[in-house]
Length: 328
Length: 124
Image 1 (tube, one colour):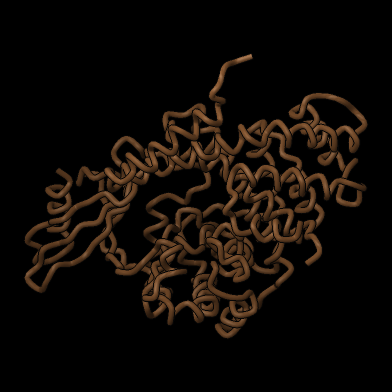
Image 2 (tube, chains in turn yellow, purple):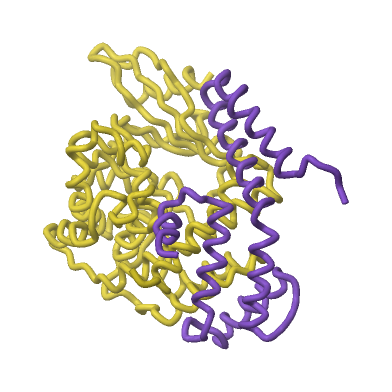
């Protein structure tokens, strides 16, 4: 039982813990799982989250920073005042829980459609685009000398990597070819500064409460690069969940995002942001193709994966809206 | 020639059965999976209804654009190659219109409720 193992672990780092209850798996692929549980304590229950690769799944996919790096980044963010859960413990091999870490559970909502529609978040919504700008500025200011080892990617290298991923699918898509050409023609070159880039900062990876952003999750694609990448990715239409006139996650305008970012003392480059938005749209489209391929060839022969393959055309229409807009 | 009911009619009948008779009986994760299954059958129905017509006009546009003949898959490969090599781009007469029409035909099958598609449909 995982509760027994979690309790043995908690006794080491949570003074006074008397038990573990309510362990439940929230999500899980073959290589990574998220569990919620409560630590019983004389001062009241402590909500916690376990993020781990189960035993036997040590190898991270090539783009991922790895769970140890993720834990380090979340803790750094927490200490710097960027909304993030506090990391309570990094797993050690003798605990028999696999590789990963345990963090404080932050209450709130991550499901994008609920955040965009439910009354509970109505007061927060108009402020979120600007607030996200401030959060991203804080994240990009994290001290580089304290960061874990991370991959470093320029725009030019990213284009080549996506092109390779796309060609390996053997899935000729004229709209994707057009986007690749556009990206090469508009490659902004090396950015004037290199910072930490979250890599998957979007509506769906944020815990939102009635008071706004409470935590930034899913740091597994963190790397070093052009900070404008995060501002472009948060604007990709796929993360607006139907609110297509509000580019920042369906919450608000680019101007509000930029204002929040600059108010926190950092500069925006709107043309680089646009470049990364196009790149991000193509990136999600190619990922949809990857899902189709894994559905066909891999062990995960699920209907959900099959249907994600059919979402590539959403990114094609969004690319056309960006690159070849029709008259309004 | 095969007998009737047609594949569209048969697929629709299964989707309707799952939607009206089975969905109300199921909860939780299985209910979510059932919704995905019904969405798949609806997609298949849309594709069976529309594919023949949209492929025929796509081939016609591609022949005019590329000056060669072939299946819809062959011609898409040729177009993709020409865009890669820079021989065809958005300045090429007819390319933007072709890509728009082709993409709209795909969304009509894949995700007719996608907000970008509904917005663009309003322009046609």
